[in-house]
Image (cartoon, rainbow, N blue to C red; front, side):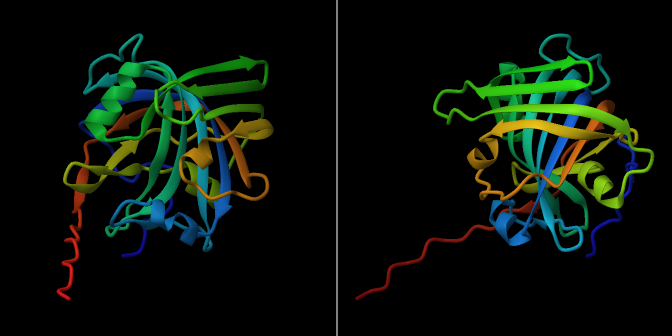
Length: 257
């Protein structure tokens, strides 16, 4: 099945949200990669989503605010925290475009544990902050969870002018209306909806990180091909749907001599 069209608005509304939240002060940094380089990192049943034959690795830093369950108000403390994620671009057998998270650094331990246990997401507890000074925004993270590498990042951008009409590639990189993940029972899809992204040009002043390598990504040569900023949007997330069962491969029986 062909992938669904790239659209700046969500193709379907999430009418009964499982979670509501706000994504604020986002910086999207992207590198172009060969789809074959990331194919082994995608869950069963998914292929790398491509634009003109190329797929992308995304490093996205932002502030999560007012995470709430169902239609309840957002939790005031545990529901607000910085996050930085490493993500890939995926498409499933139904043609649904999404993202696959390779890592998700967050500064609140309780949401990290809930995300790992409840949704099997690769959340990692980190010391983080997001600071804005005029048009310059700085994001910092350093992992705290015992047993993990000391993965960290420092990202500094200057926010530029609003983009009146983003390109189709910019929509491809930012307007992702769901995530694919390995839930209990197989690979599923969790839809989201939000208003159209208000996007700005951004200049990357500094990007010191080893999150991509810690997430298993191959070395990326050269600077990123796209750096964008958004002040943010309110978001609604649905429930996992469309599970693709795992394939069990039985162990090979040893041959008799």
